[in-house]
Image (cartoon, rainbow, N blue to C red; front, side, top):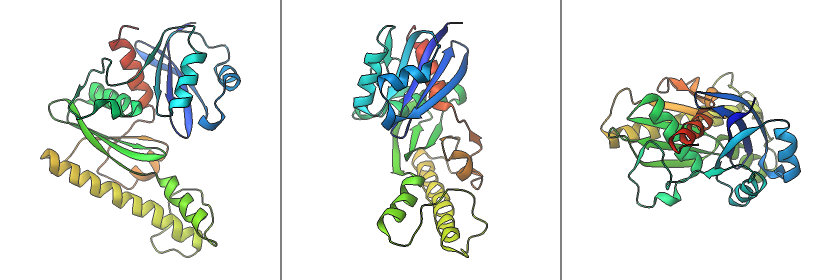
Length: 247
């Protein structure tokens, strides 16, 4: 079966590929962005077939390469210049990351406004849709893995750790102490940023928030402020964008 769309989320760490139809997402695959070559893309996509491509890229060189590789079918690159289904109220719209625009579209179309998207990727990004249904800005902070990798790289005795729920706040080993600092500290960072965003929007209780990204489930497990986790929000946003732009 030929899919309506090939959806691509080209981010700093991984590039995700998914087949999509006007009413649903299909199977997905991914490869490390650093390993993205014409041969690797061909191998990853295998026998998949599609009618058009929707590409979100925050890695310009790799995005250009993907557009060139896949030029046999129409390629729509996500930017603030295309139809997104959500208004843009931002001083320099062209500077908004394509993945953030896809997240904003997915969250707004599926959940309405106001809504905040928290994307736990290489960086953690907060994207805010106002009560009027407009993208009004966001917040960017270091990603959870970037913080722990930094400690490992910049100190002689701190190990590289696998991120998971710490057994308690008081560390009984170096690894335990790092996990507590990372996970509990990160939850505090997210909670305070959401609190300040709510103040700016005039919403002090029950701010609608949708989380996505690799560490969303881990962090949200201890954050009652966030009730929705949608791992495929970016891809869903790309699927919706495809329909809005007549693909």
